[in-house]
Image 1 (cartoon, rainbow, N blue to C red):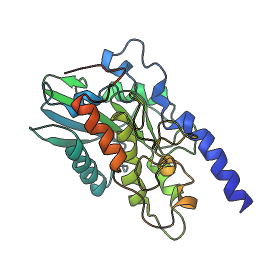
Image 2: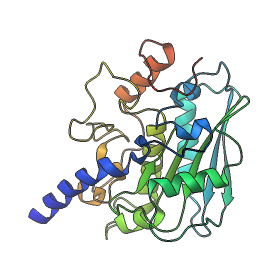
Image 3: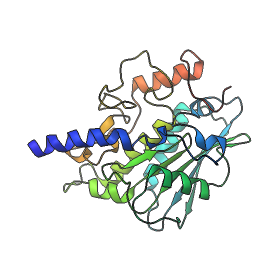
Image 4: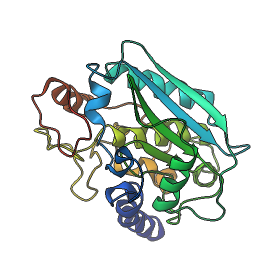
Length: 262
């Protein structure tokens, strides 16, 4: 029991440095969109005044393609909260990343920029980019990371390691939730680019929900999740998350650090 408690304490400390690696400044010589922080394109997703379509670019290493259920869940959840009358679709590409070993936030930025098909703000299309590389993050307690306004990495090897012996939750379920969790950070959740009137940010894990039924719960992208969840993982935004997004979309809640505004 003492080992489990110690592991959870260490995981919570490391999570603050890992999951939101994009809170640092991005590539100095990259596109302006690439220098934003997670949540910097929140309004671009929530509004259709310019971007009427959304493309989720998914680059994966050979043998590391995301589960079909992950792609379906992600597009369905984004369709629920983002205003994109021309649809949301995923484009999946097998990619030989020019990288080996552990990944840092800067490595994710570099490779995302190198293999991106088009800029995040591409005419009437908003493009977010997900990497599924081989290997893990340089903080091995982290299963996924949002590194700027449009780029995320999900570490399948670390997810496989996080699956407990009973497969409850399974690696597929973990991948589903981790991927949506990181994209939730691109949406600005929780309190990354706004201050919610609802008290649902975990005080010990900034940028994360205190509700274990929310996919934005702090433990969802931590390797210790198998010790916290013994059954189903959350795979949806909760009522407070959705209320925040609705208020941001309506203008009732002010959004900070936006790369685009209606």
